Length: 356
Image (cartoon, rainbow, N blue to C red):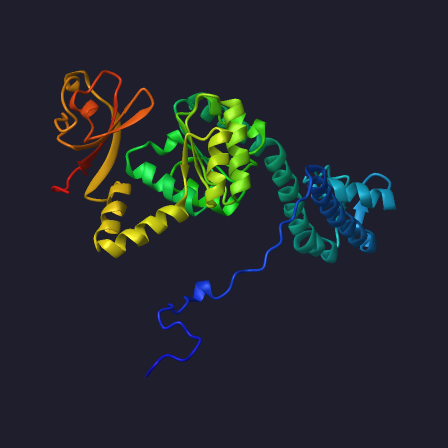
């Protein structure tokens, strides 16, 4: 039976988890506002217990003067909730003791958790996080900083780990807590912050990074990140993802060493598949460490100097030499004799695979 008009016959049926997204709204409460809410809730519970004790004051006895005043009720409530218990005022009736057991005890526990939770959030937790951050910062050197953990950023982090980069040498900065939670599962360092701020980049020692990968999702934000990074770290290599072709020049002028346009690359793969069914497959194979072959860029060894690019020590297929900032193809005469300091790009088999 032919598919109905307007319907995509290849569209997959959504899973139950894909059928809806929980409605959420970001709530930003300042620190003092949070403290005020907690204190107000605790005081509300105390006021409730005071009113209950005042209503049942006949069930209490004052061993000093025998009279239970409102001040005595407030005093008894405070020492009861804080579990101090001097014994000068005590519940004597069955109803008063039942109130202490059923109502005051849960309130006592709730107030304790409120204040302990506040102390943890505003003192212990923050102090511990500052301590951990200081320890991580001490170890940050020659690391990779990833600004933006969207589709491209997450793929790049996964590929870096596949290539053998220690996750502890990768720092991911993104404002989304959900994205960072996924990144943290990989063992990398994460920071929820605005990467366009100088303070954020200084905190991850951007000037000591091995490389910076930028994929902010928007070209204007990505270019601003390039400018900010280049201002703080003039010599650190920067790779950035841009999606509009006319923004590639702007990204390079901002200081990016490598500008990657996924839209153009996708177009190249599509066009290549027209003339050869296996071209796009081979290009994807080259780009990933999980393929049978991979592209490698390295400095030539001392033993390779004087050799042609076709006779590399690794047994790989040499493609291009970079000499004094100039790209030289394998067919050019300069590639017949490698020189010290040359950077060669070659195709090598992936470890454990057969020939490409």
